[in-house]
Image (cartoon, rainbow, N blue to C red; front, side):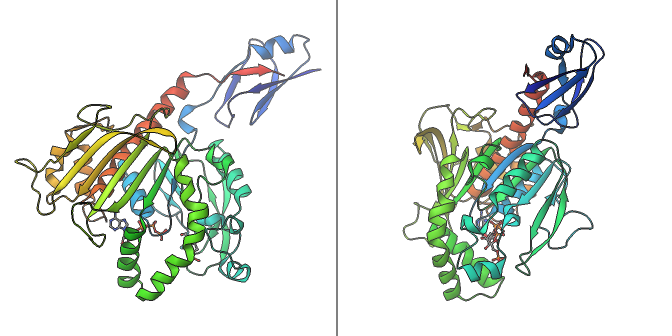
Length: 404
Ligand SMILES: Nc1ncnc2c1ncn2[C@@H]1O[C@H](COP(=O)(O)OP(=O)(O)OP(=O)(O)O)[C@@H](O)[C@H]1O
Ligand SMILES: O=C(CO)[C@H](O)[C@H](O)COP(=O)(O)O
């Protein structure tokens, strides 16, 4: 009996099939195929084996990083809507699950990889942002397994009780989104991402949003909100904020420059897009690569005080070449957004007016009248486009095999 192992450059999963020029008995595991045969010609046959995997079922992995209360859930709702169908927690599972599943996407919250529960963190004097409170080995193993087409039993961090609940089954989806505090912190996890986004909310705006949500909806006092932001800040600066250097797209939210000393109600939002990212071409305004300042308020766009200002141009971000699209101000009439949409290019829509349609559909979501909603919607469309391109390219590329 002769045995020959062939290593592949791509991971193999249960969708893969192997054909050889002659009859051989074979089996395969994640990165290699083993051929057994009574023939001495095994080695030659193995080298000419053709390995085919179904591209449809290989998971594309997207990372979304941001601090708590910075709009991740809102962004996820916009993204899953682009793919159609509702995103819901796993049916019949833990009612406090953080996971959202739709036909195309599964969104998992990285809080589920907290290794210390609320009491454990208190006893050790660490915050949830501290890497010591999180299990990056498990995060890496499970995200890799899902990407390789293997279902996992993922833990659940229960935000109601502050405890770690029994795990839930996560099956490989078409698109896996890992959202939370640390999707780009661990190099191994970062390398699994096909595309990454960082929501960079400036302190002033974060404070305004926290007050609005935690005072109005959760009954917290102004003092306690201030204290919680201050307590998280050193770890946020040390472990969360630096991840933005790795992101393929950053949505930066700043106070307006149109009104002096505004309290974070009118926003200036920048979409920073890395150049040279495979399957992602930055959005542009009017003329790709040029520098444009545009005030669209006129006959076709109603603007009340303080108006709307767009900017587009090239820049550098953490040493990378980027394109930046910026919007300062807010829309009065969302149906007129079509005027702005028609001047943007590379937005990966499937039909004229798709951005406007998505924005109108979710007019009640926070940020629908400003650049946060507009840019989140556009990034959602870019992710759909990236996914479709990846699937097409995988379908064209046969798995490459090298003999041991
Ligand atoms: N674009 C926006 N414009 C205005 N307010 C916003 C925007 N996005 C989010 N907010 C405010 O921030 C709050 C938190 O938003 P969201 O739930 O999407 O964030 P999150 O990052 O998922 O939060 P958490 O991690 O705490 O669950 C919202 O209730 C809203 O008050
Ligand atoms: O930063 C966070 C991410 O959402 C939370 O504070 C962290 O997950 C801890 O959660 P809780 O406050 O519910 O114990």
